[in-house]
Length: 347
Image 1 (cartoon, rainbow, N blue to C red):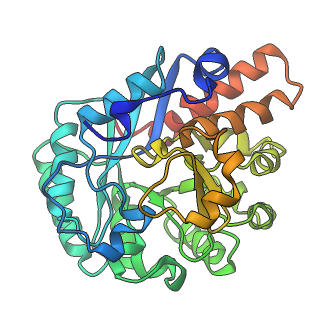
Image 2 (image 1 turned 90 degrees about the horizontal axis):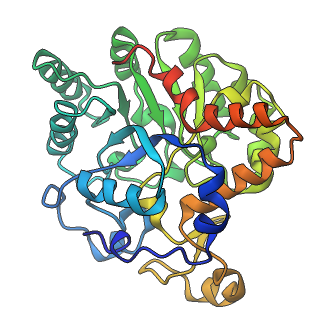
């Protein structure tokens, strides 16, 4: 069993005392990583010190165990699942693992990992699975397959036109972790605008609220008009900054575009983003001792990242002065209804 899930603790009583009663009974988790042990090449010591490489496997059994612990009392309605998009992974094996689960689980929406240097292989694997009765719902491209840091990449490098042409034909969903510093960058905004114009059959989920380093970057992005595009949605995984949700909820259209997402197993990390780094309750191989010491008091009030995401959403919804019925509808939209709208024709 995974080292994080096997020693579950409600460190500060956040779930038991506050979140469990507030979270709707049904959950659609729009962002999870799963994969078996043994399909990943050895991670180098340098790579092992990066948060990205902390988890290299997480089986469906471990995922379900995590749900049972962290969302105790709730029903996981549906799951979006894909492999670990690391350069060391065997992409074919990772996709086959998800495909095997799709064959026996109607509540899982699978996404294919894709090699940006060999899109034809992704296409072939998709159709091979489809001919076998296994239908993937989307594609999960990722910068790490390029072999260079995200800050040095452009989104179109790992989401090439040939991939988009195929996705548009099959009406697939794009789970996008943007390049650079995220959607505040004009190059990423232009990419999304061109995508939605030229490939109208593709729905886009911007992971981690489109990504930002500073809240002001998210504010800038929200003023770009991207959020108004019908094809664009946002998963909330890892985004625990309260002011980001205040800006998002101010736009009533955005309330129909937010998708709850755990990013498990990464959502099990006991901490939150702090600009370019994490501060965490636990010490990890990639923890910065100076940062950990600087925020020692704040660290003692941290728990699983997914709880902090939910807490930020909860606090902002409660600040909207909505009626009881409106509040319930908004919660149900975020935790499952909005995701069902994304995938309404995929099952």
